[in-house]
Length: 273
Ligand SMILES: C[S@@+](CC[C@H](N)C(=O)[O-])C[C@H]1O[C@@H](n2cnc3c(N)ncnc32)[C@H](O)[C@@H]1O
Image 1 (cartoon, rainbow, N blue to C red):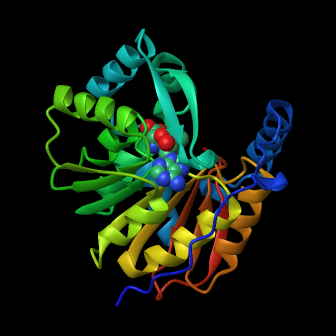
Image 2: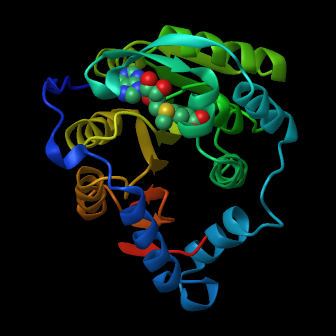
């Protein structure tokens, strides 16, 4: 039975939610790159499989039609009034081209999502943070997959729908509204992969992880975006890793993977990608 957890008002953006500066992220990335493990440093067969099937360039899925849609969005001249529930519902004028350049996961990481869907044979996926629908298209590219994707702003969600229409993807359900309200609409639907890419603050990230346990099975893979984006996200990532729900975590710097399978021995990996 789904338990309704208390909602919190993000009235003030916590100080720790401010993103790190570009320089700070660049330095952290360089440190990550030179200290992270490669396949040779790892002794877990489960993680070997992850590397071999999700991270090896030869295994990664090429989806040129989705990338053509990304390019078309980058060339768009359209502007919208964008409601950002990640910033307390702040409304601002945004160019679709700028959004396509700055807000979407690059191809390098989006391809891992498509490979994860295939390798783990995910049938039902959930995404928090549709934006223009590019990672949604990657997640929905599996041969027998369906995706539920959630977005606060109705105009970007409408553009995402056009993208999927162009791609002939009819296995995507779009849910529009603040996650704080729309997550309850999921009922007890179970998902194999849950990708959380919106509202990058400590409190909602922890709350969504907790709340989405009702939609997870023992095999569900959680994927978190931008785990090193701000002190708040670092804190959330450390706490998620330490939680009893997380058995194996894999940190790729811009994406964090959490496997909850109870049979796995609790271990944390930082892998070079
Ligand atoms: C980084 S973008 C998602 C990018 C997309 N996954 C991709 O890479 O193609 C995050 C999206 O989450 C949405 N979002 C953030 N907080 C939200 C909330 N509380 N409720 C609903 N949508 C939210 C924003 O409107 C934004 O479009």
